Length: 398
Figure 1 (cartoon, rainbow, N blue to C red):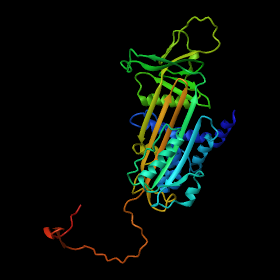
Figure 2: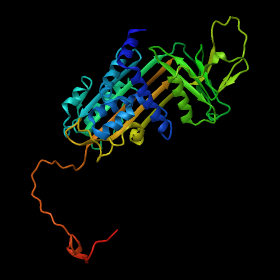
Figure 3: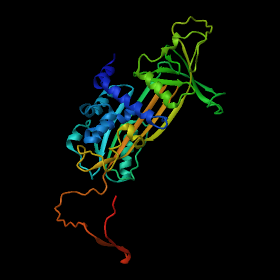
Figure 4: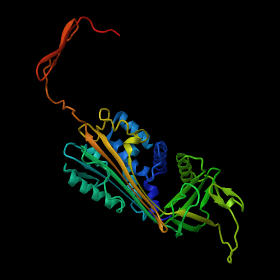
């Protein structure tokens, strides 16, 4: 085991991994449509940062979504950054920018990774330039802009960036092809890829999952389901295959003439003896981009209360009442003949609650109780014209 793998396992516990994977599963399978590119892990540390500044029901909802207790949630962002710090294939970053209208709690900022806190000027163009530069730097240029609308009131920005790049242990060969049947028929020539891998394919009665190994300890899994399965069902099978060692069986157990989902087993003649399992793969190149509004997924992500201006409680984050006003993720994934690269940028904007008065002035108050019959009228305010008048003899009863 390499040094980077040692560091990764020391920093991110198995329970952390299970919690982050659990969030990914709940989030993706709760969406109306499976996104073309998304990262639950990109969201996870931001929810932890929010939880560390929340109280009462707001905190409880976030912790439930995270799958962590309060102490571990406070440590999770730094643990994730530590885990990937020495990885040759992964990078991660987290940052917070505060505007002048909010006063951050010093205990909350002390719990953030070092150097994570910056400032917003309040000038949308200048702030956008700074945030975009951070996004491009920490996603290796794959995502050049922060996915937030800075024309809206923004008093605090929280962002996480995750990037990975791996080179295949066995590269693919580019091969143009056209599909004669199926949903891709009629597309014309597409960028196909082919390779011969080893024991890389596992199957069940309703799905087949290929594991493509890359350097830096990165695998990319491709899952194919029965034609009658929904995208959510196929994604569920793929998540199972990625997290359960005993999922399915190796395709090496199949015999000539056997079939599985998308799989045929046959014999062929060669001048050279077979030295190990062979898995012939035909797939396609892809580059997929998605921008997701995470407020739409508030229930799955524990953001229902956090995004509610009236009910959000972040007393341990800022002196002023704030709530999550925007939550977005931009994600890009590229699968090519030589490797795979992807980046996810997750950003949340927080705003001060509108019209919340400061309760720091003494008032003298007179109070009247209409507890017997009384008159009323309605008037046109600009002119003083009385529109309707009457007498209330008794109140309406239930």
